[in-house]
Image (cartoon, rainbow, N blue to C red; front, side, top):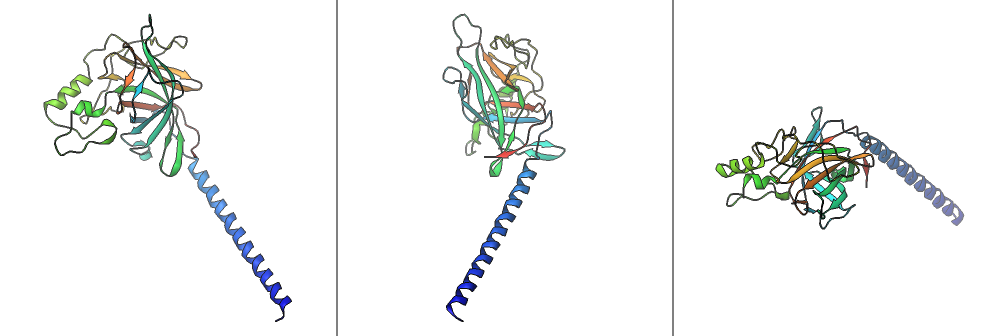
Length: 268
């Protein structure tokens, strides 16, 4: 075989290899597109409860509008028997307002919106939720862990027995509403630091010291009020305090509830 024939063969082989690679790339893109379409079909129905705990403290004296807020779920959220948001899922949001109590003001405030749940492998579910209940960290209800018992992350740990746990639960579930608004209500959008309405909290904490899905109001946080405002098109939780600042420690429990069908999932 002469040199010209060899070069022609090499050229044909190169074209064939390039074509095979191109077909492989097209197939991968098609598979990725199909996978993406499957992922983006996920949505959350209205009325699903999502229990979560803050992963870092919030202090209205130090915080500013736009600061990130993060929490992790402490139970799975299910729809039609299927888990849509697993336990220990990261929730991300931001502050819509933050102010210490100024002279002459009745309350200090923070406003919180949760934007999305971040699932494994980078999938995100946009959230449209309200905060309908808030409670002290689980470990504050259960008491310190027994000797030799590891404490779970986020300030909530395994349940403790005996009188200490019952005392914690009793403290977290006051028999009558405090003097400040203590349940989800409306907020004057012109003055979001003045929540309206005051009803006794409903639901409460289970034997593990966690908020239950039907909980509504504030539990175990004296002077703290919870109300609802809006930030753009999203509902915002407005948390008030009669003290100089709103301070929510890491592990503070939140019970969220979905409001409308959420939009499609996406990836980073």
